[in-house]
Each structure stands twice: as C-alpha cells, then as structure tokens.
Length: 184
Image (cartoon, rainbow, N blue to C red; front, side, top):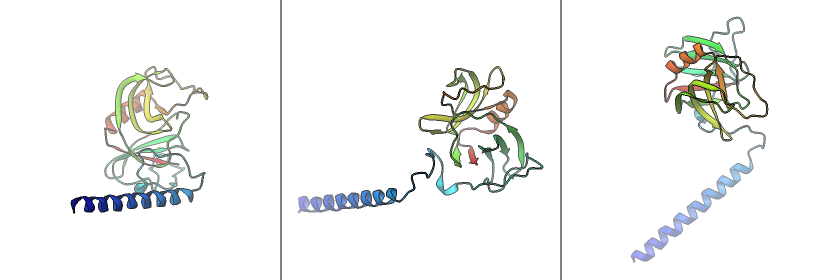
C-alpha cells in the first residue's frame, strides 16, 4: 500500500508542477515585449510612481516616492534625496549616472565597499550597491580624486557618482538593508 500511495503523491506533484509551468508560460506570453528592464531586487508591491517634483525647491522630496527613512534617486533628474524617518530631507544633491540605469522601484542596499576600483578603472570610495541590471552592478560611489566624471559610452557602468562630501553622507546614511526608491 505504501508504494501505491507514494506513486499517487508523485503523480499529483507532477501534475501540479505541469499546471504551474503551463500557467506561467501563458502569463509570460501576455506580457508586452517592451515592458521594461529587469528589476533584480526590486519589490513590485512597493513600486513607486512617476513622482511630481517641486521645481521651485529641488530639495523637496518628490511626492509618491515612499515613506519613512530612504534614499530617493531620480534617474531623469540625476538627483538624490536622503530622507529621514519622519519624511524630512536631510540632504539633496545632484549625481552623475553611469551608462546603465536601474528600473523604477524600491530596492534595499545589498552591499558596501569602503574603496575599490570602478568598472571604468577609476579609484572610488564609499560604494553603496542596491541592484544589478543585466550583470551590471548599480550603486552610489565617489571618485577618490573628486574629479568630474567623463563617461565612456562604450563601457557599461552602473556607478552613480557623487562628490566625496555627498559620498560621505550617503555612506553614513545608507547602511545594509536601507531602502532605495528609484523614480523616473
């Protein structure tokens, strides 16, 4: 009897896996090809919308960029806001993005490095990483020599460069697990 019940369980399991696989295939066939880029560690349940900006005061955190303590990064404005637990902006600054942008969404800081060599060969410090796109790691960093960044369009980079002063602030603010909200 034990062998017939284990055969029955095996059959049910195989049928369930086949059904899930088929439903997954059907669902993927209905997704438009231009849906967007992968969101490696983004949380779809907490995705952010296109947030309106206060043009008169760029230090004001964009509405719809989340709640609580977080880093807000606008890929369209090349601006970062460090937002405290009560929603107050503790610091805001412009950045120079790499050639690969993260998709809008909510991420968590996954790793940090005090100093490394960037993918473009530049010595960088205070690296705060939060996702990757097609094998390119995305994160904030500051060039050690604090020189303006000349990006090579032929090199795929995910480094979002900030000044050393702003890099110090990011390093203190965005520890492992900190929330990063990427908005358009």
